[in-house]
Image (cartoon, rainbow, N blue to C red; front, top):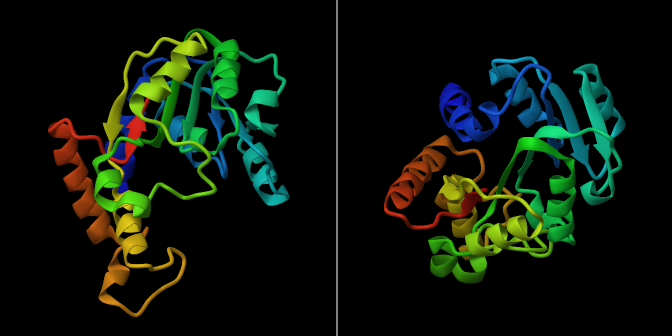
Length: 231
């Protein structure tokens, strides 16, 4: 399962980024955390690339681990980070919904992308069919951690208002949103294990995650919005 995820799904979803990379390209991940996406990009890129990671803060162990992997760190809210570097690719996986001023983030990105550079975002899609099915129990609601939820139209408007050109905007699979929506509907805390058959709906159950990935692929094929969008 891990091999399929790494070599099929992750490589496929990173194609818009990979095809823009050349030897020496600067790549920034906003909300980098432990640097998993950056390390994935280094591993699957055909070219040697320079990695940069941003997060609000890095604990000392994470900082040392990332620096040891030759990753340059930009701590703090990205819209206030000062760097002379221009990036060939900027990524942000489930980050923009957490920021106070999304337009300011898009404008910072516009100012720090090289000509021909690419931005790749993933964020919840507020127009998903799951929101209509589960209402306030939809797994990506996450109030108050998610400060903003965007439809594709709204997210694209923010990007264009900042000066960016939208080349591709679609939905992708989001199996954990199904599991969390079901748990929320059953009043089951996401972080607590329950002695119930419904405990199968969690972040790690490969059976339910695999099943709902297939469901999302069917929805995408039918043009029905899933819980996550790619910009």
